[in-house]
Amino acid sequence: MMHRRLISLFIVFITSILACNHVQATAVKYRSFSDLMHNADAILKGQVSEISSRRMENGTIVSFVTLSDLELLKGEYAGAEFTLAFHGGEVNGLVQKIQGSPEFHLSQQLILFLQGNGKRMVPLSGWGQGMFIIKENRILDYQTNPVVDIVNDQIVVNRLVTPNMIVVGAPQPETFDANSPPLLASSFIEQIKAFPTAKSQQPLESVEPRSFSLPNRQTSEAIMRGQ
Image 1 (tube, rainbow, N blue to C red):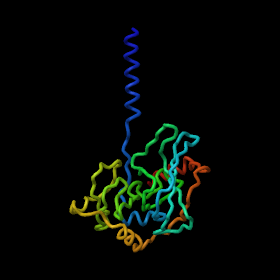
Image 2: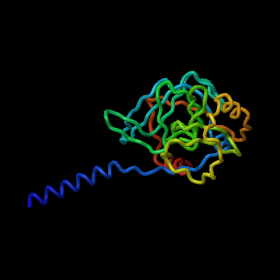
Image 3: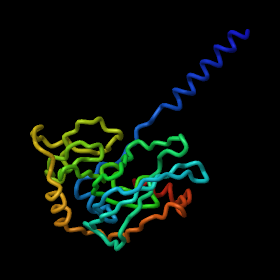
Image 4: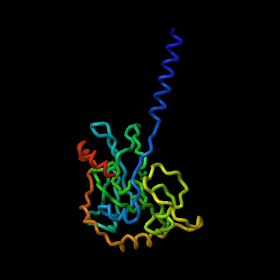
């Protein structure tokens, strides 16, 4: 009897481990270059200078990413630094991970298409689609895949890393030479600045990590439907 009970407990234990490690893929709408431009509240270039995380009263972990050395490519913002709030992170060994959300590292040089900072789980247009890394003056996507061109409104990526999210409605990828170097950062920035933005952009708001609180449930649900 005791033997069978131990086996049952062991099965429950293993099932719990598997359940905890099961991760569902995040599905987001495809964003073309013009989609990113039109949906972004602002587009900001900067360097990651600080990363911190805090656990909210409801148990949600929120990470705060501060950018300095700012260059505003589109929108309005006058501050010397800018802090974003992302769901997920690590506090005292407890990890919460949001699939499809970018990872940040100190000293990263980034171009971010910002949307709904302080209100959305991931305050970027199209989640990871709205983050670009500058490395050696070349453009990489949020997973460090080389961005080789913008063709027919499509951001052409030489995908070397398996995507961590499902992009819904993505067109057939444009063909490209696999030996093509990544797009120059200066060229990418020029195309951003030259784009005629039709949207009336929302004022860009930084968050304060120590006083930040989550939006109410109704607001969160409405925002999630628009991700």
